[in-house]
Length: 204
Image (tube, rainbow, N blue to C red):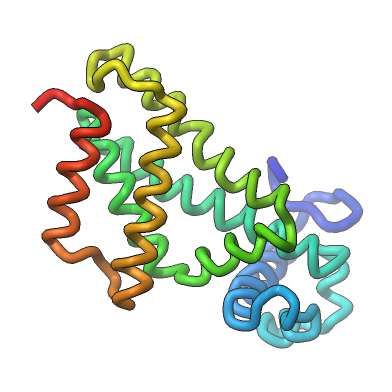
């Protein structure tokens, strides 16, 4: 969904309506993350949000619809966090490492992101594809531009983007989720920087 949030009738929401919708998405993140899609219910989502069940249907038509919108919402937020951080870098290598850092911070705050994305593989395959394609979209373009500026070697921007995305996801899974910590250990950060430099063939 693009543009300002709307209700099920397609009407733009008031600030109060937008706040209620956001509260429902926050509750959905909690419920889907803790219980899984099949055990979750609209009743549990509305209870967690502190709203009446009928209120849910002003904003979403079904459990599947709120699940899909939750993935869009998490996707938007993680991309925004990574873009905001990476834009502070003066080289592509710096931008990459800052973007990774923002991703790990987001993951530590939203640990259910992994579980929700894994559920999408079976519940909503089109949203799984959407999630990774949206993550890659701007990433590929940024790498293409960096390559043109001579900040990388003769890389394939799309293959490189997906390789780096996969690395970030699994490192987050191992050291953020696996260790239940808020940040990566310093040796892991140093090794990540070394690997990213190698992948980018970035100048020393």
